[in-house]
Length: 164
Image 1 (cartoon, rainbow, N blue to C red):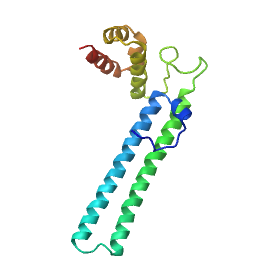
Image 2 (image 1 turned 135 degrees about the horizontal axis):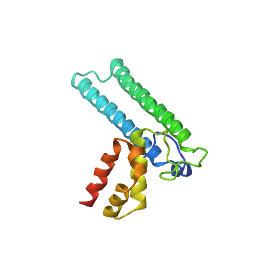
Image 3 (image 1 turned 90 degrees about the horizontal axis):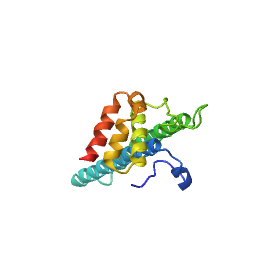
Image 4 (image 1 turned 120 degrees about the vertical axis):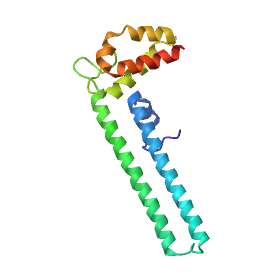
């Protein structure tokens, strides 16, 4: 996937947390969908005006500009939302008086439960390569029960699916 929703240098991109990377990928997917839809609408419009011998009219060019400007506005909204999310995530990822946020040493309680899910999942995926040992370690983690809330069982089921 080519990431062009925001301009980041390689060092800046490498400094993004897993949660931030997920945010960028989701925004890029939204942008690609918006542009694909606009391209399909433009192609459909072209076929329509060609079938009616109307290709050289100003109405066609005006409608094509409307499709392009609508897509650009939608992409800009997605981009602005991504920048806001990244800035908000960066505020919560700096740390507190106990040091930088890092699960399980100093978990970040400012994250939403879905973001906590991603943090804990990434932690266990990086710490242990054996699926059975990963599941056993997660099952013994008492912090994860309170930190994840209702998402604890979801992650347990996910990690259990890798064992099978």
